[in-house]
Image 1: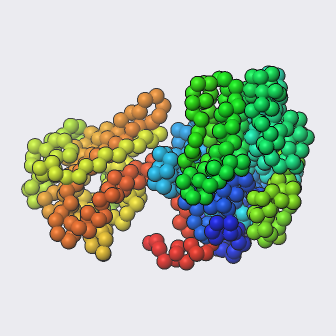
Image 2: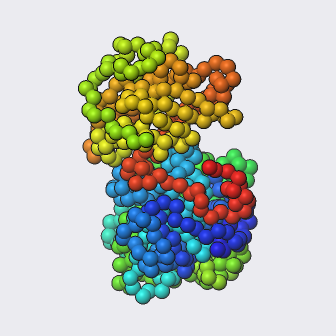
Image 3: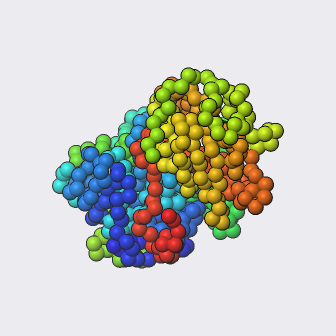
Length: 386
Length: 207
């Protein structure tokens, strides 16, 4: 089959690799019909996520048709149309039973790497370096999906792929970020740093949960425009964000802030320099700003991905203001079903963020375009058959 | 060779097998961790919590024929009697380490303790305990292992093999045990598609 392979910093190529096979009795094989490039793939592309290796197949937002199931798969059948969550969860450990699916104990075969770096291992994830299991990703024509019965969301309507594809990651991720804000309907003001795909879903989810006002911050005009269409007030990250936020909230500051930017924020030469010299693994510019700007006793919600060690974190602001931090990889299986219902009911159309539809063969060109945000690029969907 | 779980032995202990052929095991051994002479051994303690009943976990471990499934290292375990088994463990440079392990304490659902007999290449003693965790967390499984690396060339090989890894090998076995008991399978990516240059590497490695 054809698959997109990481071959070093800012270098990806489409290679012919072997087709995936069932390796364990709870696996299934999915023939991929649509797959997307995620903002977090940029961290991989840029080489800032530890434990990625040359030859790894990327991609964790995909859907398709089940063509084969292992002996122990009961709920899923060949022929099912499915969306695959980016996290792999066993469904039977304590964390899964508590719906903390991304903390699953039993799906990361590289627990020793993860424990060295993180203390305890996270769940396995598709196409996201060896720290999260080293599973081959879904920017490919086929994928092996472990624990099919726990993970897969069946699509039993005739909605096109592009309306349901983002249930694989970014819609649930934006939604969980908004839910973590503990929004009081009709009252809470939420500020969102980053109007990329996750930020867009966080903004829309905050409104669905009843936020009185959402303020969206980004440096890219077309991303601000898309946030504006969802009803957000927008700020340019070049503005004096603190003063603007105070002015928009009667001097209180936002009740909750969402960092939908993560480890490669722009705006701080200090961090870009330190990250380049490997003195710092992450560039937490958006997180610092969010910590300063959030109202006293407010919430900072972090769906943006961080990989390692952060510098100059204003912990004094967090402590003295009594902030609550909520974060984590998304507990996908908890959200996919209810969010599918919102799409079916017409409450949200996830496809509005798509700017580019390309064949998989053009993914090597799509990565730099998405990274540099050229050509108005917000979201790329790839067709593996082309 | 099939190996039945030993029928509930009288709990608590000091019951040592009569068929201990080399006669070296002192008859008063009642607790684990004391077979390495002079307290000079290297000690490792690792624990994990598994969402399963202590009795089920105990039963799996008590049948030593199950253990190669969870030890992520080439090992052959040949049961000899209800209490004794022969272990053959591969070491660097094509060597093999061998020992007889004998169960010296067997409390169904709670504890299994073992020690090696006198001819062991690597004298070791250990125990695995199964204790209820708080609330609905499951069972806390704790392995204590103490071993005495031998002298000489084999000793050097053993030291190389175990210096950093005895603890991680014990822990690795516990993680695999947990995955098998909870999820029904031990996660792996071996055999999945990979791009170059890993394709070439994958062909060279692995059993």
